Length: 455
Image (cartoon, rainbow, N blue to C red):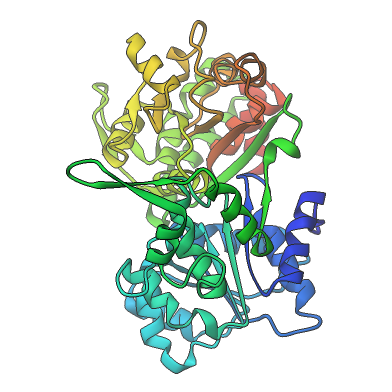
């Protein structure tokens, strides 16, 4: 299937065509990655834009960009090299001939030092560009500082983010510097801050408040370099924006999964009259491994298998740019792992205060089991994004937890914003079967037997 840009993606591509150094500020779910690749392919017919270097959070660099290239027929001829892993792996990937190289922000200092004078990328793409907000001319973050030494050696520089200033407009200077060396916002961060903000003494620290006139002036200053797209202007607010986010199991974990899956499908193939309840029970271990942990006894003690879905959730959090997210889970081991990895998150318990805190914006991540997040809860004030970390067969539970923040409730609360549903799907596992069952409303038995035929 060939990629064909939607209208809002055409706007993104047009901005890239017209500006050699630019920023794309587009809401999550608007296809920034595919639009960017398509733009480069069109540009490459009239100028050299490859090789391109994509700098992104680790999982996005490792999986998302390579997967997007493979997804579309008109992109699939592009060679992608992922500069992640051990020193040897990074070195081999950096030396390999490719059209697109991807690297995580943490490895930028290493890459700039390793390549030295050979850092000759024609295009640099900073995905989730808020990672560059810490840049300062003399201090600031080491990753952004390393990038600053080579950034203007590339004829094209593209920044992608859904939330350029999640913590206020002070976040903009570091990002915009990579586009024009401070021409529109000031040659230094101090000059930028002193022009548009005023200091407020708060005792132990100084808070910088923006002047009333500054917002409009900053917007006007950055407008030529940026294009901003809001999903609410392009999506039908009565429908959900649904996106599957792939998670790739490590080799060892996939081998363990295949062993359990083989036993399941062999038994199903022999007994085509298997009861749905029994069939579902046989998928439990497959679903557990897909999520990352396997129960070892009836007491629900569990053994860690992998963190592929944890990494996928991190990428969603990065893309959300600080917007609150409900994370739906199924297994007790999921919750324990989520709370450990994301200590800022909270478990949706039965206390009214938890619901109130979520609706007041005090909880960035709310971990909720669909069985306990159904009727009676009003969560629409706290956010419009829900992510399914793990999956289960119960269609009613799935629909009920979505309804807590659904389009009708958003409208009733006075919000004009779409509802985003992210399904973290372990590739090559029974996750696909469960998601298909929910989408098609097939019986559990039919879904499993169909999967048996495919395997």
